[in-house]
Image (cartoon, rainbow, N blue to C red; front, side, top):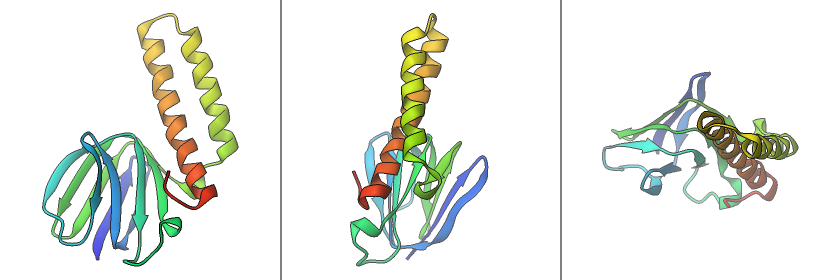
Length: 142
């Protein structure tokens, strides 16, 4: 088993021993299992998926929407430090859809580069939250 901690600016979002964690990084998704080599990487905005037991089916995995951050693996411990992290149970699919639509409107109405970039960040965040809500509804990875 590997000790997994997901820490956001709001505090510890997850801390437990698990079998496998799938993390979005700059180089693509990585799977972290027990005895993983030491690693420091950058987490990308996306979905973290957690498998608690070795034979647990994909539809039983837990999912978190995260903002970018840091990934640190050492001594059978994985720490992911991010600005934001939301468990699938904390995300309303309807609210995520509405937020995505609002962000798209903001992007269309943006009059300068700063507004455009802020709208794009909101779109990206809403899209990830919507993806995690969909995973919860369907009970599997996307």
